Length: 346
Image (cartoon, helix red, strand yellow):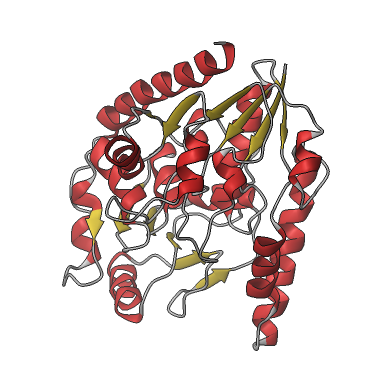
């Protein structure tokens, strides 16, 4: 059995790489021959290169080049097909199963304005299609669903999604009942591959934050006497910015942190995986996917919005019952594993 995984594994952010890594190695450890499908439309490729390389600030350009090289060096850890812009090359691989997901591959309102129909199975050939934990991102139920999205999704044999918003879109707009599963990063133990930094006992900041929020974090830092370290995305008020970092080093910074403040989806996931004392900011773009984790694991007391006049230090005083949280994660993890393995072996 030959399995292909079509997802956005080569974008330059830790979550995109780690969700693909987790799914590939989860399957490999269970004896399934699988390859990441190294395909990207020419339009999307050009857009990415423009974002990374068309920088007026030479320092930012140099950092982006270093990030690209750092991430590309990690691709040797992944088993993947030869890179192509063309679906004909993908179909020549003759996959028995193609798994679509995870990540926001179904967000047809993404940064370039249109999703690639291939991520919905359009134009692909396989004996079976499985959607594992894709997301519509910030698409909501009120938006009109493009015809190619409907056509492709109805061709998929087994469908799961990773957030309630995506589940409701499929149920209410397309009349399709699907399973809610966990992101692949929940399924894999990264302890054996993470790279720990030399730092410990700090406040980790991961995400984009405005000046007001960073000043709030700075006040908390002064109150408890710990430095602020921002990873991957720099913040002016941080004591240390570690901008060029691999995904496995990023996990190490999560693991060694005393406190974590994030507004990123995988920032929250890895905070939970490593039982961290965290606070999460909800932003409009990431609201749909963050809301699901917050509701599933009852994390409402650890959430703040940038418009609220709340001292972050007060959020960290609220109870965080990890025995209950980890028990729920275990239940959803078993259900997610069962869905995936049953779909493959059906």
